[in-house]
Length: 281
Image (cartoon, rainbow, N blue to C red; front, side, top):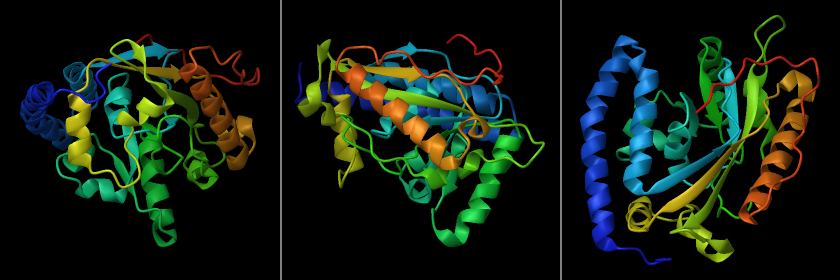
């Protein structure tokens, strides 16, 4: 397991990544401007190939909800999670407003129709309306309710206030909420372990450029993605209960997956729940 990474490999991978990205960006911009179906499908093609370029092996358990609207609720380790989730199904992200100003990644976020939120009290209503409008239009969004990234070994507390985006007026179509666990598990076939896993995590005051250069120089990185049984806020009963359900399920599954074992039987939604049949990835 080469924890230090190869500078030559990093340069090759990032060169291919940049050429591929810069080639597709104007195509996606046209799709978005025209409201084309390609605006949803091209990002999946893009992220799947970026995962290959960067050496990510994605193992999937379960299937992403194909019902709309859907809110995917996931733990968050790194900006690399965007590539991993984006490679698996059509979706957009809810991100902090600062991301919009990032070099390159900010443009990519906009091209994937990310909903940016400032998380200031004064703008909560406007941002909630923007998210609701996207969901009303039959969208699928990813929420990272920790509000930050962690070291990949554990999750941070979920902010229940963020689950307000799943609230719907009476008579409206319910938002399907699907918990998702992301676990970065192996490097070159060997378990990372709690001390090596932060090599792919991006948190604290890490600089983006050096971190990406380091990750690109590593070997094959395995990441496991577990899609859990979908639910709704109505089934949970409240935002707080929904946040607790997702946090407990994702946290328990992350711990079990990193230990190389199954998390055990997963909670089953009440019998009255109805969801569209998920598609196979």
